Image (tube, rainbow, N blue to C red; front, side, top):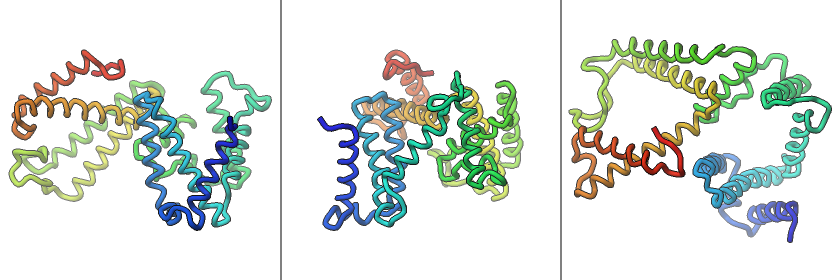
Length: 298
């Protein structure tokens, strides 16, 4: 039986063969930029497999994610930038350097102590590299990541230096404050006020409102999201994962409604708002009776 190292080297060699002359035309024409969307897609597929506790599918999804690393490393080797060996060396060195409580003499008996040590070591590394003198502690948070994750990272970094609510009630107070500010802006909304863009709206489409008001509403909604992300962080809940699960729950329940209506030869467009609400409640009751995966649902 081949070793882990031999299996890894086989994967590396296969990637090199695909990119070599006479290899795969599609693989050969890819660039760092063209591969980026696949990296994001594969990351979300890994997360979905974990959410579903699909242990049969997860190894394949992790393999697809590893393929992205091999792809980038092979392209970098071809242009003389770095190699997969450099990637592995950097990773191993970082893991050893940032875990002195395991590989050195430092002590860390709790997860919070580990995090504090990790952040202190990172700051020292940046200082030695000449990167720590003027840079903000938020500089390492990429603006390319999903907005919910970015908000979580930003607020978490700030919390590490003490810029945080001392207790959770402060977050609920802030949430109410932001809701009040949004309501205040809505007083400037043209009559008859915000309406859904679905059926039953004459000339359905975007309501004409001043650009300045739209910008203020966007800002207030953004503030609401940011407080909710902070609330999730405070509770040690991953915002992105929580919203993903709620999205899936909504999809399940709506598809239940569609199926129930299909039995009578109708579509949601042909049902009244009252009937749709009744079907929605039935969908919730159905999930409560037989929750998927043994979980609970509100």
